[in-house]
Length: 301
Image (cartoon, rainbow, N blue to C red; front, side, top):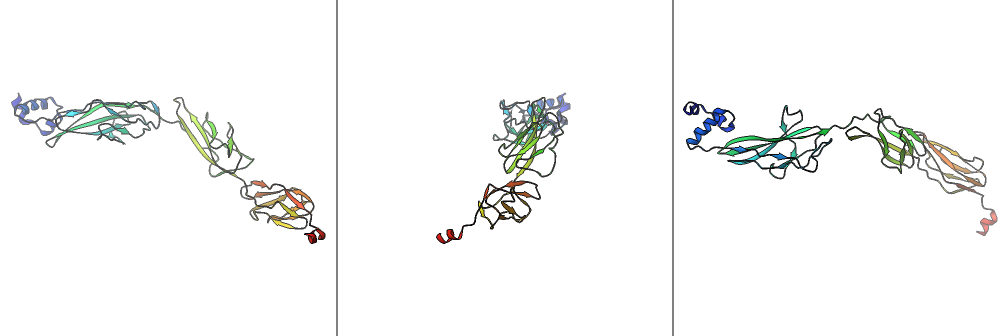
């Protein structure tokens, strides 16, 4: 029987040792004194840091070798992964510091099967075998709609804007409570000038969470003004363009939209500027309207 099989043996059959005929050929070759290349793929095991299940992205950390592969020749390794229930396999993405004997896969966004391919190379002939398969269960993150309104979102200090999200069951949070607060219903209140991220987070039954973020600019005009003005005199306020100025008491001091304030009568007054583009306003602190010094006071001085 061997005499009938051995002459028809091919090199590919000798490499793979899969068909029963190739095993008979192997026996025949051994009897002829030929060198036989063998490979035992060893096995792999999950690391302890994050074996899953877990939410995406799952970082499995290092996959161990227990034991290493063994064979007649020089042993090399490659790794493969499948994300379609092992219907197809692709080269695994990740890194290794052990010549790929062990492997650190990249974070996974879907459930993934991993296997190691061990190859023994002897006399330029390579024999390969697969390890066991390990499977990581990855829960997808929930879907979250964008926060509305879209585009650039501004709110004035001491004013409010209402944000909404079409995905039910989420929670609202501010990433900087000193700049803006947000209620459980998405109402944002501007507190201090600056930029803040408002976040709406949805958590599903697997305790997986996904946020939607919205950048909100809290605006307030920046004012420049003096602390006093004399009756019958003027002083300049800034900004001088881009909005309107109003006096809290025109009987004591007036102001034009170019920021020119004029003292009218002794007392105190404030001035409020409203920015035309944002609609945001800011008010000065109290400004004193002082009487003009008398001639005797000037002479004495």
